[in-house]
Amino acid sequence: MFDNNTHCPYYWIKERFVSPFGTIELTAEREKHIVLFHPEVRGQRKHVNATLAEPEVIRRSRFDPKVFILYRMISQGKYLAVVVKTNHRNFILTAYLTRNIQQS
Image (cartoon, rainbow, N blue to C red; front, side, top):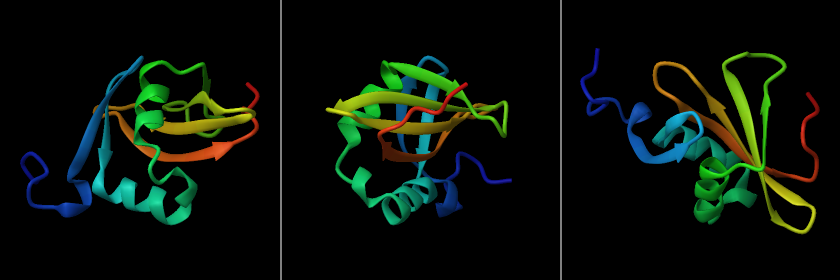
């Protein structure tokens, strides 16, 4: 097992955020995923922080009871969605822009 994630760049913690679920981690691997698959989120760090700190809407995933989607409107009709896995270490799975909030 790696201590403090210092030996495995895949799990290096890039940043920590405050949320209703406690501290949320963003790893280097998840940041790479977001930039690659959701480039529209690049440069939206302050909105990610605001969405996690004070989401306007929180929905539980229909597929995994430990995954939540936090939404916050960042411009007229556009929401930033931050998908979080809650477990022994809460972390961001992905983030993307959307016009629709998932229904419960």
